[in-house]
Amino acid sequence: MKFYNIAILFVSCFVACINGRSQGLTRTEKRDEILKNIVPPKLSPNTFRLTDFGARGDSMTNCKPAFDKAIAACKKKGGGRIMVPSGIYIVNGPIHMVSNTAIDLAKGAKLVFGTNPDHYLPAVPTSWEGTFLYNYSPLIYAYQAENIAITGEGTIDGNGKEGFAKWYDLQKPDQQLSREMNHSGVPVSQRQFGKGHYLRPQLIQFFECKNILVEGVTIQNSPFWTVHFLKSENIIARKVKFNAFNKNNDGFDPEYSRNILIEDIDFNNADDNVAVKAGRDQEGRLTAIPSENIIIRNSRFKGLHGLVIGSEMSAGVQNVFVENCTYGGYCKRGIYLKSNPDRGGFIRDIYVNDVTFGEVEDAVFITSFYHGEGKGYETDIRNVYLDNVKFTTATNAGLVIQGYPTKKVSNIQFSNIKIDSCGTAISFTNAEQVIFSNVVIGKEITVPSAANHTPSH
Image (cartoon, rainbow, N blue to C red; front, side, top):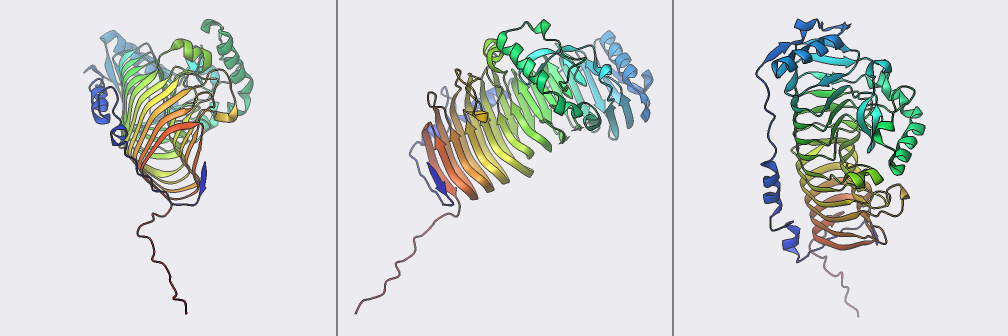
């Protein structure tokens, strides 16, 4: 069903459904129950100055040994905060965080990571586009840690443009190999990448961690995904600024993770601002840990897409709340839910409330057939509620739903939606139980004009 350049006003009597009631709770009650389980990490009062361990913020000295020593001192003391004074600190290799440790970057402090790939070996357990494997270490990496934080007003510069980001054009064989290993169930210990391979590492990754805080810092120039929460929980990301323009420079990628609050963020990414993921294909379905209980609020979207769910989401995604957000610049798509029949899993109980975008290509795009490929494992997409969502312009399409013939997208509810102008207003295929209440696409039609009657003689 398609409509071109028209105004639409639908009114539905399904008011109780639009309120998003689930399991007896309203949307706000459900959100508030989740918020009770998201608390800041308990950080040690011990403090250590990085410069006391040999670091110099002179843009020349390699400060990797100083970070290693400072982290060892924190571990010995049972925890601590590593204070990084103003200056430019070269770090030729990864920072591996441990439990009860924080890195605090003073205003004017900048970490700039080196570009020699050998410095990021040996390979560590990680994940790449939804497949577990061993690869070059993320630049800042925490594995099986708790009570960890990255805070302050300083900057983390991955130096990706001069380093790992150049591998984008070389990655295809390794990307395909990782997917084949996923599909054939190769043991993770045998999925050895790193030296001789070209999978770019993430800038920051928390893997099997809990009680995490990322606050205040500016993050830029990532080699690949920027901040990856992997099999982690109880996470707060607040007042972060992104300037990340290399290929695949997503902002936040929660994967197999839960109880996450993302708020007051200034996004500026060449890729997705928030991309909620949950594993790829067979491995994701077997892992069966959904990404859930994620709240994104009071933030400014700018980049490729605002909120994305997928496409690696085979373990399922549920209970995602986007509230009181606006835009800091152009986004290609505002809300983008994507899967294909290789994935399986589910996307459900997604709430988007009080969100405003400017110009986009597509306003809301929900597809079960991403890239037009896949078979055998259709995704169940249902219970998506959008209320008070506005767009200035959608140059291509306003509202798009593309279900799958054998698994239709269902119970999608649009309430108080306004798109001032767009190309195609609505395009729905293989969708059912789509409900509208106060939806206007194009110029709103108000009082009908009077008949222009000329009496006959």
